[in-house]
View 1 (cartoon, one colour):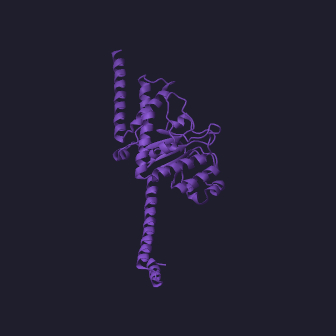
View 2 (cartoon, one colour):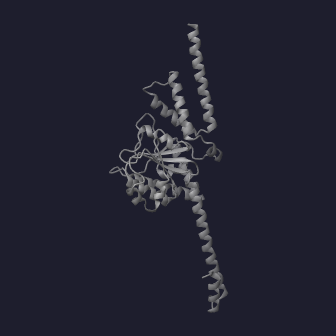
View 3 (cartoon, one colour):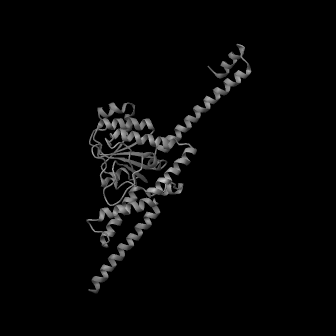
Length: 315
């Protein structure tokens, strides 16, 4: 029934024009709320759309189905599977996905982590432990770390069900989150871990202006304590941020040059390169800055070769 028809019947029944005005206001306010909710939902999807969930060597089809379902529940649509050990399109996955099987059908399947994150500019890895090598890595709770992924091409990495991500796999990430749990039984099911992180991403994307200021202050405090990269990044930095594939090319080039000139030794190269990774990840390099740094490396290579040639000629 239209609001005007209902209001006319009210007046015909002896109701006052004032009551009709109250009803019209209520009806229009509800319409406004419905339209507002549609706009908010569209904005939420826009903020979450660039984020890719990356599962490394997932082993259980039931988990894959559950993950697809929770992703669709929370407005996430990008899924990449790295070397999956189960059938993502089989009956078990389909049964658990229910109405979200399209997420699995559209998922990318790749062989390596570098392939999975080649086109993103930010990566966060989930882990339940501090990395054991020489670099102390701050582990952030999801509600603090994950908002960094919003509004930009980014990836959230999860490891296999039985042992999580290895140190070598964690090296591809720029930041790290750890879901708090009890020491009695700290290991979460993979689908549960994705659900917790997905929910925190949605909450971060929905945050209102007042709470956003408080959150920014909390993040800033945590960053000061753990010396991680600043959360406040200009829009220009977001646009020009170097993709992970370009950073990985630079890190490989840097390691080769440092080995060639004797700064790195083979048996300590991995640990030292982790320190360099953290240094440059903290700087949030742009594509132009990475190109400049690689130009310096090429000049070092040229100077090294020239020095060797000159020494050989003098001999």
